[in-house]
Length: 153
Image (cartoon, rainbow, N blue to C red):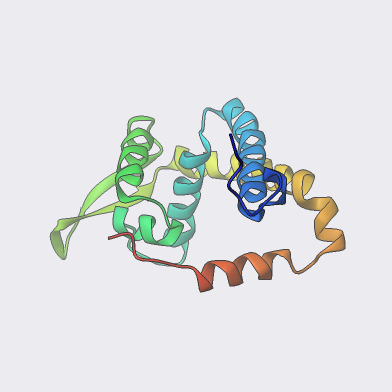
């Protein structure tokens, strides 16, 4: 059987390498967050909700989905789990009864305070060596995202 790629081997593919790097980094984050009973997705949505609330935003599932560039159905499922865990509460928007506002509970805020240093320590451990050599990695990734955004609708 013939290999029909322009790459002689998978590790020559930037996309495949990015996939592997992302998977490895996520496994490291997941291992550490499991110690405080959070998944990576739960942490991201809980921390994003905390951040947006601290900026005075009215946080909805749609806003969380847009802010984190996550699938709306996944956000809905994870928010439901966070609510069951007592980390987020849902309340009707007084000015629009159709809209549900999400807010971290006191326990949710405490969990973010515990989780942020854990996640940041994993990031430093994982990315630290390359960041010392390539300070522009964040700008490169931001540029890639800005050039390649798409509407999931």
